[in-house]
Image (cartoon, rainbow, N blue to C red):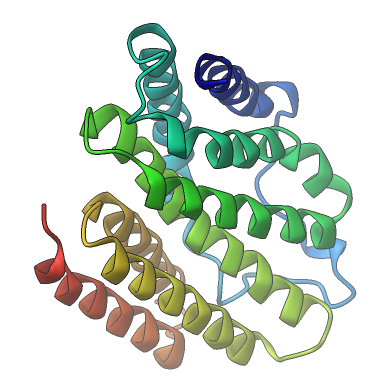
Length: 233
């Protein structure tokens, strides 16, 4: 099964990376997909931040390809492969679902996050830049993206006003990020990716300036950087 999981991860990574090509033109949930239209929601990072998906797709492909070609039966790679496969396999179907149902897509992205984090905690000690790093960046961005989706649900369905919804979502994202980074004691790429998203949230909330959301994002950045001292790498 070790060899089979390596091949399955590679196939899932290919399918995941191909999904934007098969479902082109997706730029996030549309305002009209919610009962309360979401125009410039406070929880959403500035648009440039989503360019990180290109890096994520490429690095996951390279890592999975290397693992299948050079680490097919390596026991150090084996533990993280089943949850990573699950996350990528679900991710391959995320874009078409997001076009028709933000609620279903939100559930899916939280499952993607849970399995990606499990994979990250299971990564081995070898081939850091090809085994650990792509999973860390992927899990870091999913930490932010899943909470952005949650914030959009809270405001979009009228459960909370825009700014409180953003604050709740950010608080959950920071709790997950800080706990994960602390217990990992490695993989600083995970925290750096979350910081990338938090900076983009500050940028998005600069005009008009949203002090509460920007302030919480800034506190989160400082906290994640402070945890860097607990890492063993």
